[in-house]
Image 1 (cartoon, rainbow, N blue to C red):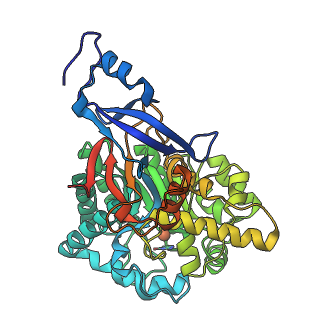
Image 2 (cartoon, rainbow, N blue to C red; image 1 turned 135 degrees about the vertical axis):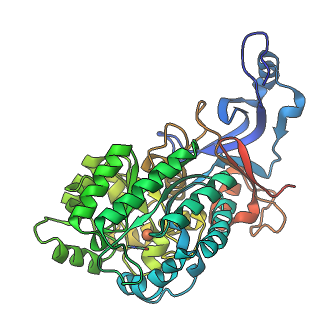
Image 3 (cartoon, rainbow, N blue to C red; image 1 turned 180 degrees about the horizontal axis):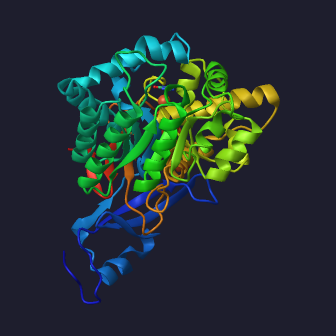
Length: 449
Ligand code: GUN
Ligand code: FE
């Protein structure tokens, strides 16, 4: 690291010049052409017009070899945020999607997750899963692991080593699950969850953090939920679970918690609806539940692929947004068959268009869905002070996209505008177009090598 005359720390300053696209409070998708973005020590130092580059170079002592000029087929966008996915379910991605949620869990999901008692198996699967997710451009993910402590530590180690930003949760579950895959007592579940929290914190990573993870209300008795809520408060942890995913699940919760007004109140009354909580799905929230989720400052991970694949239902995201809830996107692998948030982004648009065509209401636009996939996810995970867009001071989590990359699945024509190229990527692009992935300024995927 060097210091220059005026005291500015330049460190590993890199400057990208070209097109940037990101979301702000005002604009779901702002396209900024002919820009210069300066990155130093993992953070965004400045965003300026490239016409000011010469002045910036002098002022900040930037050398020519630290400037990376994007081509006209390239742009930078913020890294994608997957607010909900299940790492141990990756062997099941793209298979067994013909049963509804509760039967699917018993028949396919629990047997697969039970295999993570074997740490060798866990290491092999988790390495593939994290590599896949990063390659899809997901710079931040909120992972459910399995109920196993050792395997979940391994998942954290792999994420740390690969350089992804993540929340990682050891799953807690002890009732209404098979004998071969359940925790034997609340004490055991709490002890292991606390050990996991302390383990992750001992890694001293600014990127990987623990998240308290009751699987969902049907698998956790009230005292387990309460104590997990207390544990999260004690360690100031994030919390994640599932809420109002399917009609059958919601009816089941009503039976299992007879004194409680609704599903959301089960979590609210056990201290689990906080501003650091993310609840997956929320397809069947009634108005009272929307009010509880909003009061808690809790975020929603909308998982359209999963909701369609398991025939759980159609989430009215426009309603949740209008009601002032924080909403991000999740792949929910393997309930959803794709590990790519680009897929969730598209499916969120299509689900919303299907709803609007039936009710004559407005739909979620591509641009709004892009915001959910980036800034929205950052808010849901309580990280928007650090990530989500290209505001100076935030960390540089970014994708270098090339619409004409080798093997590109989309066609570009000379008359295409920058905006049209970006739309084509969002609708038809894939990991072949994502040449480089950066997390906190570190290049964690590089297809240009
Ligand atoms: N509800 C409880 N567990 C799960 C799970 O693994 N996947 C989904 N989609 N819903 C759940
Ligand atoms: Fe899920």
